[in-house]
Image: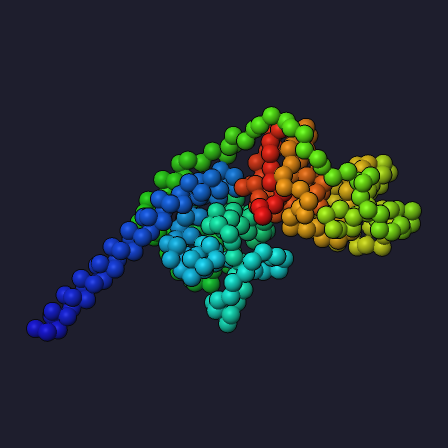
Length: 309
């Protein structure tokens, strides 16, 4: 009799816990679904999959990483991270994880993390509503070590009907527009001259060394004149492939900074691109995307951030 009562009590407790967890997940979804949809429209990552990952990785916002570091996806520091950090034992003892000032930055960094790594490239060939393909692809690409990772994501998506979020996909969001205004921008004729090598002036912008290209320049000629490896120039200047140089383009000789020291924002001018703006201010391109919630097509007069603090 006592065993029977204990079994009933255990079932009751488990049902209460299950209902509590379900309600916690529903509350989390309601709080962050708009951010997941916005990220989907900027980066073509299904909102259903992003939300399921966030639910699983952050325990619906209740994990230590989520509450103490606003890290909802368990993203580790990896090489190149210069933001805030927090330590936590995971696969290894006392590992380094990224720390954010706001959960929205965690969602944005997750989008940049997936879209910026070649091992996830095949996922972006899938249809936006193929959440099962995305979940299985993430597991196959090594996003998580848990062999049941795809199954757990799919279960969350179907249990909470997260696939409904994917119906809000709009690949061409309306850009924020405002009238053109006068905002100072860096001009190389005002940069400090640090040195001269083979007739080239070594200048400084945002605390980093650069040269200004002339009409006959190529990245190869700059690399040869300054004894810098061509692959390093590609890395320093956010280039996937070496494209043509134009007169007065900036060529950085060391890795750019993650934010602007002297400028808070920039007003987009005609024919500017994300890359040209990153070069103008000496900022790494992924960070410029990070501050501005994506890499949608720029519009003249649009105001974009060059740092967040």
